[in-house]
Image (cartoon, rainbow, N blue to C red; front, top):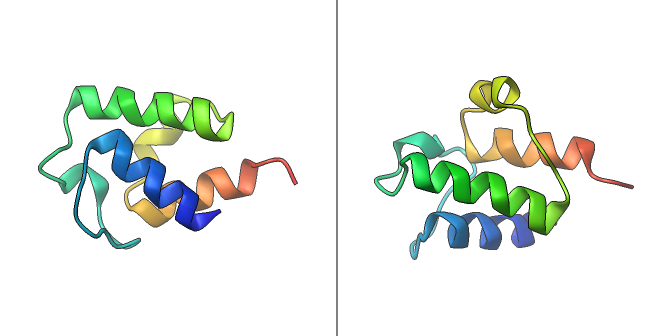
Length: 75
């Protein structure tokens, strides 16, 4: 699931370089309000996951986001 997540994450933000799970995704040069919306849409379409804005704001790293969706993904 992690590789699927990373591929979808990079596609949503239009990133064509390697990323690390420890990266703070809001610090990517690609990060803006449009990429935020793209990421939210990707979570819904790829992982059937909706995330409240308050919860999203607490997520800092790529790993935080992955852990959030992993914990809530259907088993």
